[in-house]
Image (tube, rainbow, N blue to C red):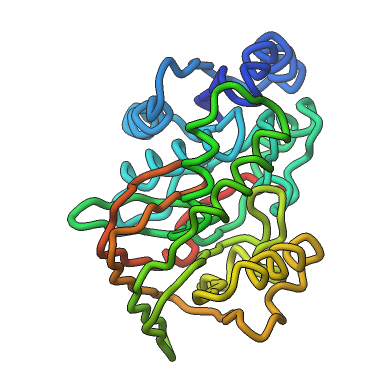
Length: 299
């Protein structure tokens, strides 16, 4: 097996670039035939992955965090058209590594590389997002409304770093929060009204939180969490429950499973996919599950 390894040096606050020699040594130790390419700019991972498939690599590996994984998955799906992707591996050297934790990828670099060399695979689901003529893919989680709004607040802050930056962004987001009027439809239901939160999940964990406890990456369905406009104190109560994974039991929260979900939003809503902002004023969004689309190198 010849693998293309795509490494994002920015992952884990630029610490990922320090792992290059360790990755090379781990590949040599297990006799893995590989080429390693370091990304230079956002979305590079998508282009490199797509070209690697067309160049005939047997596997493509994302070395980085959830954002890197998402870029590579987009390239693999784009290159594979209607077919299942070529085998996809993960070397988790990002900050949170939410997705890799949920699918059992070893956190130790050498163990992750050994898993890739072993070549065992399983088929898992992917997600497709259609945005006014644009298509984007995700593997872990996507959200509209409050969640990406807080991400945008985080991006705007440059004077703070570390965990305090996330907490300040959260407080600012809650203070500024205004509801989006949304019409939302899923397989067996729908909602029309003012909306604060809608998170669409392929795996349970995002941003370090168990947003969708019990979500499975190979069941052919998204798990979604929907919260309407409520008093700000209720927003805080739901967020506190999120820390314990009991938010889905809150009486104001709708939790369900679906293979498809459509959103009409006024005003346009921000949206993220696997933690990366892909739009800020989207008025029409469609989610579609891609059953067993991704061939994951797995334990």
